[in-house]
Length: 202
Ligand SMILES: [Fe+2]
Image (cartoon, rainbow, N blue to C red; front, side, top):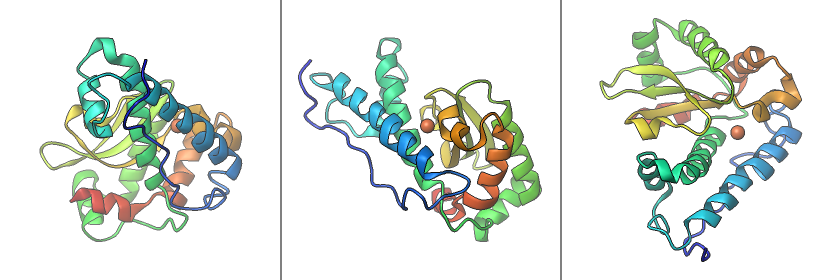
């Protein structure tokens, strides 16, 4: 297969690799970003050369490949690149709590920030196997919690993602082993990037 004319590359992390400790260690980031995310980028670049996908923006590749059974490999790798790009932005060493119109939207959709966090944690824990938990804005403008398996992503389903946590074991196992619910609780309390979520609310 020819090389991709428009090859993708890893985005720069918005913080230092040790900035999210102790919830996400530098060691986890070095594998998660430097090995796993990089592998999805390399795989996709190796798959799209000479195809109709070469030269398309990433989001378009994800949406197009989602509609084609024979392009499952392209969907998985493009979806994982998109999801990870979004995940790195979903975290901030500053942490904090939702404010402004995001807080209002959470209040009206879930009854309060605590209720939202409890439901999000429960959904993330219940996602069987590898996948993602998301805060999304649905077509009706309401906020919802959703989960996706493996590389699946809300952008393939007409939803607008605001925030995501990766619940593949590679995201937390070195730091929390099998304690996914504890990881997600700490993630929400200490790392969730609420200003990024508010910006995505539009
Ligand atoms: Fe991941």
